[in-house]
Length: 569
Figure 1 (spheres, helix red, strand yellow):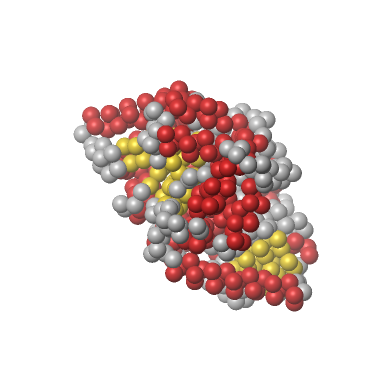
Figure 2 (figure 1 turned 90 degrees about the vertical axis):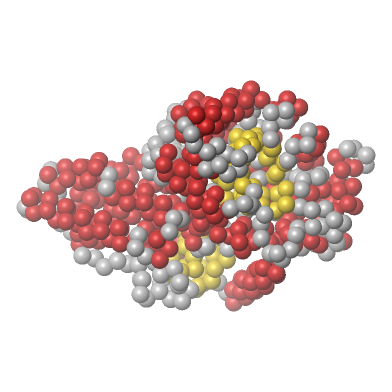
């Protein structure tokens, strides 16, 4: 799945292809004029999209459309189109030739991020062809069924934004991946999505009944009545649960035996922040600053970063908030920061390693955060710390930027706190040294579990081979919990484990009291906390981890306790 949720509706086939009949130009100057006029009209049509509804305010889909607009103004792309016409092709044939060349070149790239940008360029080429041929847009904008589910080979972000969002319920793509721009836009707009659905376009027709499950990554085309009934009930159950979670918004997350749990959001885009007021979360436990870089087509300048961070801080207000420094590399690739191909990018030149090797990039981001704070308290989290020495180097950069700001006569943060992200196993054996230098720490369970088990979480063959809350992994996490208590350092869990009820129960059982998760997980986790009598569960789990009783499967133990206490797992 590329965007979570369940949607039932009717198929709307999206096919922007235009058939070209004339390839050789009879009048080259005339074809050049046609090309220039078509490019100008296409750019105006993209500009017009910025004048609609939610495009008036800053959002991630506006930022993605900005980068899409930059593709339309790319000089190299336009130059290649002009050269193709000058070599004797019609304007339409020139667009097709240039796009085919671009597609062949980009498909040779091993970088999934670069390959996913191909969809944006396909969208642009198809849009230009429609302008040239006078073909009407096949977006069905005014004739969408009430519950439309768009099915396509691929889809550009601008194409998705052209659909009537009041009627669009979901998208199914043959080529879509979670890192694609259209996936990011779909998640932002709350549109359910499934990608990598092989041959789906050839299997369906307009108007077919379809059910899609973004969470499970499943598509049911022309479902039998019993399957449809199951998903209708799933939607109804989800609606009832949402009503229940809404009633918990103003309640403190307190277990039945009086343990207070702090529930926070993971975020990374301005639009995510709107959910803060709806879920009742206490603040932002992790703001991923790299998403601004991933949706941009060029390196964000200092002023652009300051503007984003200031907007985020203004919205969050006095609530707690942690900004994680740029965590790119591995599976988070940006096209304008190229690096040599790596066999194991997750364990390569990424995150803090990249930042220390590119100090200008690090200093600019730190400077932007300090300026955006404008005297307000600021928490900065250093990602992927492998050893104390490199963490201290990063702290040195931050402190020097703070001094520079002070010398410039600008306001420094009222209180600047710097923390470390615990996600590399080697740092578990240097916690006593590291915690002497930190104001707080956070656990990134996604990478920590991946590195502890030597399993690539993107590899479906092994990603689910090892239970993240099995005894070895839970002991590793408890090492961090115990060290944080020893040095009285605040600790937050920021990985996916925090947002899954059974896994969250395991974390609570070993002493975690601050959990940061996606907004949609706040309700289920708060419901779990409010119904939980934690002490007996914690005692059983800790007895197993401390070898006081024979080993037992932790997941089975917690499932048993959830049944005894009737917990909403």
